[in-house]
Amino acid sequence: MPHDHHDHDHPHALLPPDPALRVKALETLLTAKGLIDPAALDEIIDTYAHKIGPQNGARVVAMAWADDNFRRRLLADATGVCAELGFYGRQGEHVVAVENTDEVHNIVVCTLCSCYPWPLLGMPPGWYKSDAYRARAVREPRAVLADFGMELTEGQAVRVWDSTAEIRYLVLPQRPEGTEGWDVDRLMTCVTRDSMIGTGLARVPA
Ligand code: FE
Picture (tube, rainbow, N blue to C red):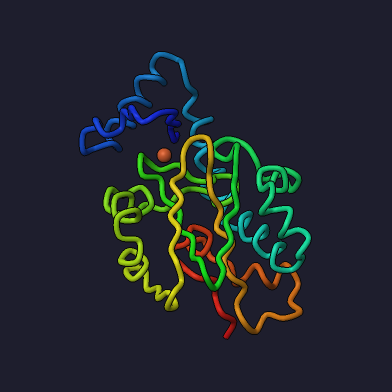
């Protein structure tokens, strides 16, 4: 399970290089002591890996594209709007939506560890948790975006949002051309996970 962090005195920098092994060791120990039920743990992991995926976030984005009033409400109070849709819970208690425009491109990182809006995007991808992404997203965001194959337009500023246990960010990507009049379900097909992290753009319809 993911951890929370509440201050900058972060224990994770002290982790040895094989966290998977240590997690397994902890799980074994906690199970042996009767403190956790491995079946319950499997179910939680399965839920986030397969049932809650980026499609929740994609629905929110598509609804914002389709309905300007919803979009304004989302930008003002993403936590409340997402909760109305049933997208809330652990690792997503406070969500802030940030909107990409011609002037600003937003990108999300957790520099301390891997905080991520689970109820909207499911499990964070491996690269999101990598030391390289966490360090470089802040130091050289344009180079990171280039590695993801993204070219920003001239004069487009990059804004980097550092997630915490308290606040998770959802990027509202720009709506692609050629989707005029599309309904929410169809618009959702343009919304990729990476476009909601800011390391990608929404998919342009063929
Ligand atoms: Fe974190």
